[in-house]
Image (cartoon, rainbow, N blue to C red):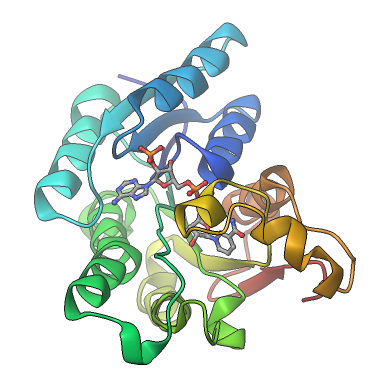
Length: 250
Ligand code: NAP
């Protein structure tokens, strides 16, 4: 059983989640890296952490399903025996489409992973961290998006609406558990250079949109991870219910 602070990063195998896992390990967290299909990528992140002297484990689990969430939290309990932080990062887009082209199946998947999965993971984390449940407190950081504010017309309004729900959930849960030692905050990344754009059929999206960003460039996963690590840390001890834009001014 670990004595270090334990952090669960959902979708920690690639992109922003992988950057968070690596940075958290550098700062002394033991990290549980969740992935859904790319075991090789998750293994590579864990191996890099271990090669630098840190502690990391990986766990497969779809955050859009109850079975997946059960597997993830079973791994938390059996392999670490404690939980101090959750980065609710796993998220998906879909092919760009107008709202009048979106199917029911698409919306079900979008909300299952991006909203219900995040609420369920936070719920399981609160059961382990809240002083009300005998825990020692902790911190949750939800990955929202600037899409929540901008609406993503013509691309993925469904994704933007799901991120709006993440924002509201962040504020509500933060207030609900504020007196129980658990802080809850969110980050709204702007255009960040990761694989997510290719998964929506637009591999050049970060490059193409860079000129529209006030800073004239896409952000990096590392730049988002810095903000996540701040919110997880004691430096943010009086920060809860906050939604921080990490978007180059977008
Ligand atoms: P990414 O590069 O596409 O990586 C997605 C990660 O999530 C991978 O580790 C993937 O695992 C995992 N994942 C996907 N579906 C999952 C599921 N159902 N269960 C568990 N894990 C799952 O994405 P990213 O760009 O780093 O985005 C991370 C978060 O930031 C998301 O919530 C996204 O909405 C948000 N965000 C990103 C941007 C951006 O521009 N990149 C902007 C705003 C917000 P596998 O490796 O196994 O596939």
